[in-house]
Amino acid sequence: MFGTYLRRELVGRRKQTLIIAIGMALAIALVILVQSFSAGVKDAQASVLESVYGVGTDITVSQTPAAPTGEPGESGEGGPGRFDFGADDGTTTDDGSTAVSQSRLSAERGTETFDAAALDSVLAVENVAAASATLALTNTTFDGELPDFSQRQEGAAPGDGAAPPSGGADGSGGSSFDVNSFTVLGLDPSGDSVGPLSAVTLADGRGLDADDADSNVAVLDSAYATSAELAVGDTVNIGGTDFEIVGTVTSTSSDATTASNVYVPLGVAQSVAGLDGMVSSISVQATSSTDIAQVKSDIKAALPDATVSTQEDLASSVSGSLASASSLISNLGTWLSLSVLVAAFALAILFTISGVARRTREFGTLKAIGWSNGRIIGQVAGESTVQALIGGAIGVIVGIGSILILNAAGITLGASATTSSSPGGAGGPGAAGPGGGFGGAAAAVVQTTDVVLNAPITGTVIAVAAGIALLGGLLAGAFGGWRAARLRPAEALRSVS
Image (cartoon, rainbow, N blue to C red; front, side, top):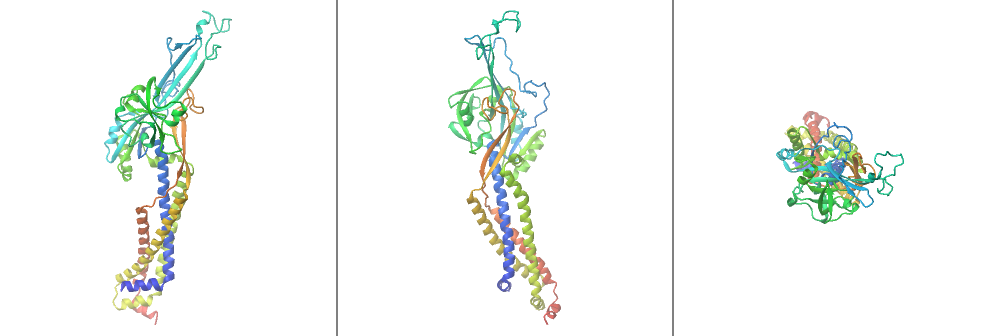
């Protein structure tokens, strides 16, 4: 009996079925588009951040920098640092001048170091799949020539006719100084599953491995190596210590730079910088994306003084057309899909109630021959549910088709991720611009890349769409069935007598 009435209703009331199906199809297609593009934008933001924070880095743990407490100019206390040379430092050149050179390795400005024991606390948190600590440093090298002041007459003051000192870069007694900086990242050589090195590909030589933990070896960013005219097999001086270059790497994102100019083993970096047992950040990978919120909360509880950030928090640093697309989807797209969904539900409910009103005689007769209210409600709900599911199926087809077409179009969005960097960090030694010289302030490094938007089609999205269609049909059937159940047999029969 149910099938007979269902078939008659769908065939005999084609207009009502078509209108309900079209309304539901539009709503479902829009929901699928918004949800898929929202997931695509999140994936694009994550790919931009991965070039900076590392593939699979769900959470980063750092320490908020403390306010400077020392006098400007004191190393690590609010100033750019100071180079001190003793009377016997330097090498005398043929023209009598003195060549001096000194390298200093210190914590990257804008960061705060903290006890490496925090890594053990992070690893002890439930649902942490992997974690790796890093130490962000800046190597600053001072090179210069001082003139031969011994030629000045003993006891004579400048300007009293004494001969000026000779030597120097131009032979006139002047001085020449170069201050070059580059960034250094100390990391666990065996922890390549999460963190900055997981976001790079090998360009030449080899990467760091577990056997390098106590070795003076380094891996360079290939762009930095080119600008500094360094190659595999050469040495690079870091903090006054020579490191053998064993490899070069490039970012997995073609238009983005890697997280640092130079990568060295964490223990060696701590020793050379005089920061034994200290790190500046911890990269964390959760067991599942559903565990990220719990892991963040537990890490915050274990390390109350730490700053704990997720990829979602860091996504706010991504700008450009990608950020605009994210804002558009989050605001306009979500509200538009909700509005269309509400309209489709209202349309289905109104047409179902209208159809019940036109079937007064039919339902009155059914009640007169013994149909219960529950059976009548079930009949109406079943009919409206099938109509909604037909619309949902059409909506899924339209939505998936639209996504495939837009993905094939290869929509490209521009994205920029801004990170802090120490002087000269991105531009190589002696780079011009902010942070390129001695005493320069920490610079903001903007890593720009173009991301091809790819909206994924997942079973979850389709299941949600089917669930929405089913919900719409059940709501319409519930209202229509309630209206039919209120009919009294005598009144229904009188209305057509």
